[in-house]
Image (cartoon, rainbow, N blue to C red; front, top):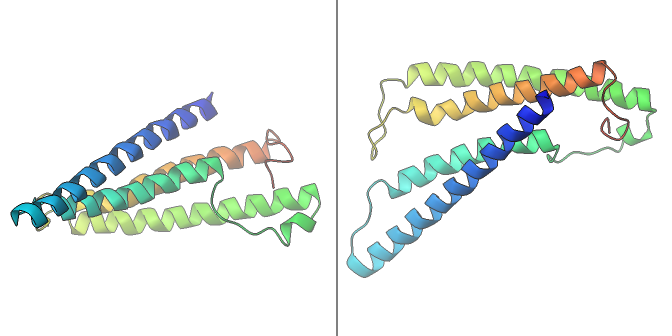
Length: 162
């Protein structure tokens, strides 16, 4: 059941990423046309596109983590026994959880520092920009903890442990 909840969450994130990409394309294209044709432009276009791109990257990282789509090398791990592969996977998950903690702490500090700072064009709190790190760290940690739980309880198949 928890896996289905995570899968739905990642499906929602995928839709949000597609919408963000569409907004970015429309904003940038419209701004280019306005600059060349009318010698004007949309003031918030560049900044909003940059923010959407950063959010899109972090949300994509969450989906990729869930789908195990990140790049990896298995020169050493592929030569290990099934038990060795599971041990390496468990250690890798613990290290990634530590990285999620570091990212969470750093992003939280940035959100606190920039809470009252506004962006140049949109004039909204810069904390929104840095909150993508918080969303990634929490979401990534939940996904990693769910996978780690499946690993230590024996619910993970051998091919998933690779």
